[in-house]
Image 1 (cartoon, helix red, strand yellow):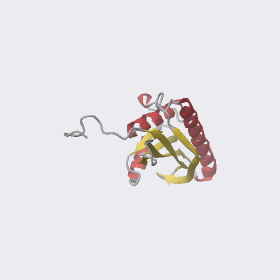
Image 2 (image 1 turned 60 degrees about the horizontal axis):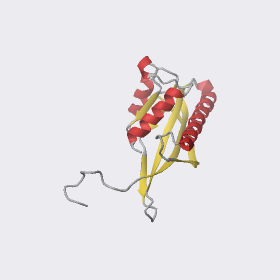
Image 3 (image 1 turned 135 degrees about the vertical axis):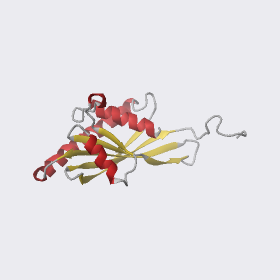
Image 4 (image 1 turned 45 degrees about the vertical axis):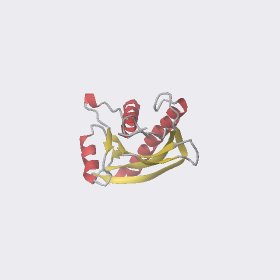
Length: 170
């Protein structure tokens, strides 16, 4: 699975989630992909561009490839997403609790989609739900607080070159 596949999948989740209600064509943006997590201005810009109070931010995936000491190659991809919401200083804990539940709802949906093989239709993608981590975040842009969630997907892949990638025969 490549980065575009992850972005499309998470954007579809944001569209289906009743808290996020991501509909960019109707100016209800609540999903953003963060291309450079070390650039805080990117977080600020995403939140400024959001129309809702709850926002899903997806970090660019990282991972590794392995042959597992056999011919069964796997791609392990680490995914991090943040659910943040606008809050005043008196309601930070309530806001974080709401963001945590929204994050759990997203993770539960991912688990369901993985079991049904609908993350990528017909493809086996293992959702490693035994190693999910989370951490509080905020303040972002002065008044957004929430949680960051990190987990991994593992999926089989063919360790082969794309046709035409080489000028000679391999």
